[in-house]
Length: 396
Image 1 (cartoon, rainbow, N blue to C red):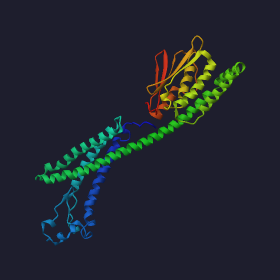
Image 2: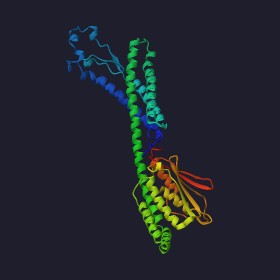
Image 3: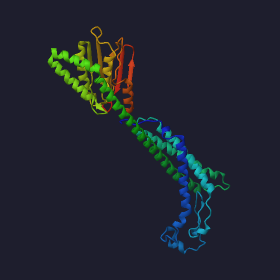
Image 4: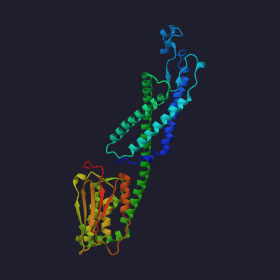
């Protein structure tokens, strides 16, 4: 597909998914911190790592009661115990762990909602979405992180000094920016997976639709009424003009062969070759009563259309309108503004024919599935007009 699939972000980021991911990420993230706090000292103690920075020569020579040898650091879950005394470990402060986990849950939840909102907006440029998402997430994370870090300190009996507050804010920002990165990556991953599934489903529907279209088009061309008229015209030509008869056979052969092709997309120039052959056949049949006005700009020849789309519109115009000496019919095929238009004056038959060809609803569904484009149909009572979008042209 040529166009990016634009869907409502709530389809791949529903509220249940946001709540589940917010809970899982916040709990798992802080569980890692708790386990690192609890087991880190025994795994990386000076006894097992003599080359550690905690066991330098200067530290070993200092007396045990020297201030530099005393534990003087802290973290979110309480003071750490001495390195070489596992029995003296203080219990983990689960109340603080729960508090910080709750703060992280709120932050992650808000970031997911913000990302979902950004992904629901159809930006003209891809980098615009990513830029707004990153800068918005940074702003939200900074505000909430500082609020969550300094909030508990306001309720303490003894106000901590500025150095301690700076360290708390710094550590909180580092932690929360890590969570922000995880949220952005997961949001894009979920959208990518959703788009892949959507494309796969639509491709299957499109293949089934194309098979049905080719089958219906073949039935239309091989319809006994169509063959009877073609053979009747051919018989009269053989008796009057053998050169025209030979040309008619070649045109009919080309149209039938084109109908049986196995292509999902075709260039406008290739489609027009079949269209002109079909138009020549119809002009031989109806004579001067049927005319075709081609106003196709050569710059659109490399654009893409769906097979049998233009021919199907011309076929419908011939089937549903009166064609006679008193009411000649002119079908116009014109390009402009990255579209190709097939139009004709409305001359309804008293008893309209029902065809098995490419219907307008069928054609509109095919364009919607292939390029997410709409076929524009207008009827003002005098002129019937159908505009097909042209895809893949450098002029569009």
